[in-house]
Length: 367
Image: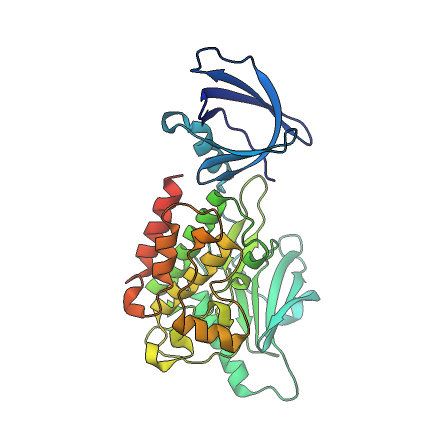
């Protein structure tokens, strides 16, 4: 489990201070009881631990026991310091340069989906051989004009919003010799590989900044419409939390446009209106539903509904998701936030994504 240091704890037998020393494999806590009539002498107990919304959950390596060690509010400075220490000081971004497709070398496939492939590639001479990702259409026979236009439209929309720290940068794009988009290379994998595994504080921070990014797109009149864990990528940073960024704006639309296309859509994270006209058009409230589904997975390790695609679509329209707190140990108040975001009727969701962002931010600041 992740390790850290906390200097104050509370448990039913009284109050105490913890100091610690770290070795290469263990953290030793020296626990001094105070507040008891006859305090015990210092103890040394080996613990591995992780932070939760309750404070610290410690697992004894010697006694095979687990307990929550809760912070006393006036003395939780180390918990705040631990969070602040893990927040990135700055967010890395791709350089603002113009490139030619012929400059790109060492192309290696890293992902694919729908009608496109993504490659990791190198730009020799740029920033000591700059690593980038390149998106291009999957070509089987003649390249349809609609494919060319679709990818260039995606790049155009994406580049309007990539100045946000938590949206993957577009480096450059063109339609020749084939349509291609050069993107910031994200070396930390995607959110789907981390769902259900993050500590509470990092998961909440990730949810807040991702919601901020989508909120920024909405203010530019753009909805994503394909939010899922695989489209949230990470950039690795030393000695802090990895930075998440929203990627793959291929299904994105200006908010005055409407789309019912479910091609390449991940049904587990789709909103009812994306496959049933009775729920209305897709719009910014569709992104709110999808974020609710993504964050449900983030905190519980599974999407709101599972099964075969047609069964999932029926469940989305007819069933209520199990509250996250019945699946996993989540912060108080998260159930209400996610269940509201996941409302089937758009009128029952948050009126604007900024309110979802604010509620998540409040949970984070209360830690």
